[in-house]
Length: 261
Image (tube, rainbow, N blue to C red; front, side, top):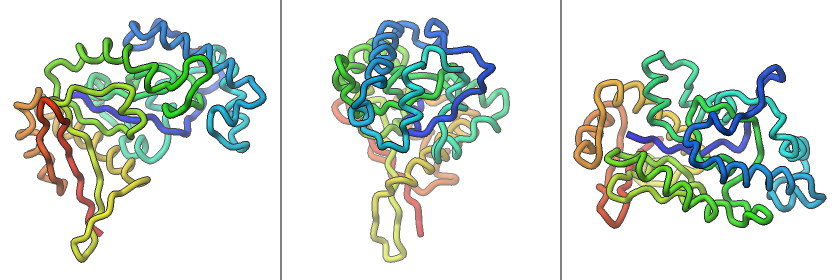
């Protein structure tokens, strides 16, 4: 099974004693050329006078944009420690057992505007860049990454059930195979039965779901392709209220988490 996560906007810098990123050591080395190109362009754009406007951030993030200009020198540490925010707090990778960490390292992929995709143990520096950005000569980042990620991930995902927890901007960078994919939604159910799509706190519940899948579902057995969906849902039904629309060759399925008030 693959669990696709979005990154967090906020990121924690590594201690100054850590070494900088080594692109050759990141997972999916076939993405190295694209990573080098985006990294170089991000550093160049971040040094411009209009960098805040181009990168779509406010003046309060000036220091983070300045840090972008020296990313090749900035200290790096595991992506699981770089990405912060409610999703990664709920995932709580630091509390995993060694066996759970091994499962998570194989199963969790984090979408990134700068790196394309990373695994939890990949060492990266803190950076500021969103997938919805049009980055200088690179242009629209989701469009830029689509071909390279398609080549790198389609084979990697072959035969696996894919749980897609990404936000829409990041989902555009790699459209996972429809027949293998369940896109995760979160809806809050009011006392009168009415529903409302959860926005910000959806990240929290997606993080909790990813943690549950690692510590409960995958810890029991693998779930491969569409044949494993029914067994997977049986495990989730123990502790989650949910609805599922099954995937087809032309359209990804939907896994809706129902959160009652």
